[in-house]
Structure formats: structure tokens, C-alpha cells
View 1 (cartoon, one colour):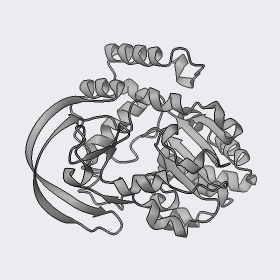
View 2 (tube, rainbow, N blue to C red):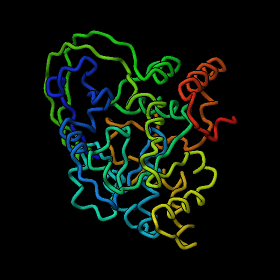
View 3 (cartoon, rainbow, N blue to C red):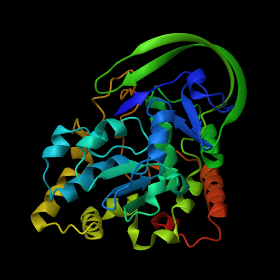
Length: 340
């Protein structure tokens, strides 16, 4: 994973930007892994018909899919997942690392992205590239996101959980004007680490704890797109937890890669939460602690469904459910967690 953090002067004068974030077509993105150059690169990216895109809203199983899909394509060969960091095996389309590793990627290339449908590369829409869209219970997404904000120094502190939930539901935080003297990290590259600093005086408007990549409901709705036809496979995080082998079979058939029973067993075993948590190529332990502090919360924290029940009060659950229900009203969405 590679990243460039820009000063507000470099990132533009958008009223929603501040030192940790930049705004791209109304979406809040962390500067730690995005730049204007990387986003322009994504816009103009030349999609190949054989490309595969795993699309998720943040904290919905992205890392899991970065492990699974390469193993399916390799027929269960574990060598890459033990020797190559997952951010190089399956890079984020919109992040700064992609342009650095693209020439090393073999066909079919696999990318992950949090981008909404309309911000995909122009060439994507005329291609035959396939998409796997993973959805997760938004209550669990909110909890996971809350803890991620706690451990990632390049994100704002989430504050109180109740306030974070309100921001998650609305897609934005509280607007505030601030004049600050800030020490900015100009360049950060996780592997290897290169850090330089520059002092700067800044005065800007910003939103505290804006939700990364916008509202959950907006993201889910925009990817329910009939134009993609049989190019897209929908699955939920919960379905994968309940029957991982069944999910692997669905993925392999969708990608025209039949796994032998032996390979299926091997992939399922390797992609268990405990095995991934102990794999340094997947658990982000290679990232320095001053960037992602696992003592505050491990990156791979629980890997379960329903953890929200340990965090939501009855009042919070009722409000959250009512807002989500209202925003997906009129759609045909049916999710496993709707029956909870």
C-alpha cells in the first residue's frame, strides 16, 4: 500500500477539505492513500475485458476478498498470499499504489474499489470486465468503521459512538471553520516508509469525521445497476460467513474457474479469519504502528456478523433501522439481516 498526503494547498481549496482528507466528486477520501494524480489515473484507466473488480463500501469484507479471488484464480496456490502484501496482489483502483504495481499484474487483473458506479473509469462501461459486489449489514459496517477510525492515524478520531452513528447515517459530520498551525506529513509510503515534513499555516472550512466514500445507502443503490447484466455478482458478507465454501463455488463459477475439491478445501481453510489474522501479508502488521495502531484496535478485529448488538442501544438500533429502511424504500433489496 502506498500513499501520498498533501497539504490543503496542494489538494485545492474545497470547503470540505482539511489535512487528512480530500474531496473527489463530493466524496471524502483519505489523503494517506489518495491523491489528485491517483484519482485522475483511475478516471483514465484502460480497463481490459478480462479485468475483475471487487466493489465494496468500506469495512464490508474488502480484505477478505483480496485474499479469496487470487486464490481462486491460481487454483489454490498459496505462494502469492504468503509472499506479496494484499495491497499489491489486489490493489485499490483509486489509490496511489496502483500505478506502481500495474505492470507487474498478470491477466486476469483483479482490483478492489470503493468507488460508486458512476465514478468508475470511462473504459469500464464499454468493457466486459466482471464485478463482484459485496454488501454487509450497515450496522456492523458502522461499528467496524468506528474502530478503524480509532486505530488509523490518518483518519479523524471518531468521537463518541452515538455521534459517529449520526454521521454515518447522514454521510457527513459537523461543518466547522478553523485556523490552525499544522505539521503535515508530506509523503508516506508504507512499504517502504519515506516520510518528510513541512510546516504550514492553513485556514479552512472542514467537516469533522465526514463519512468516507459517502452514505452506505447511496453506494449500495448505485451498484444495483441493470446495465451490467450478467457481468456482476452480488453477495453479502453474511452469506460468506455462513457458507464460505458455497461462496467460493459461486465466485469460481462466475469467473469460469472451477476449483477441485482439494483446492476448495485449501482456499476455505486459508481464508478463515484466524488464518488471515496470522498472515503478515494480509493483517496489515507490515504497516508502522504510528500509521495504524493495532493496540487501539486490530485491523482484522472480529470478522463476525452481529457485533453491532454489543454496541447499539435499543434507541440507536431503532433510529438506525428506520433511517436505512426509509432510504431503501421502493427498492427490491432483500438482505439476510432483514429478518433479525
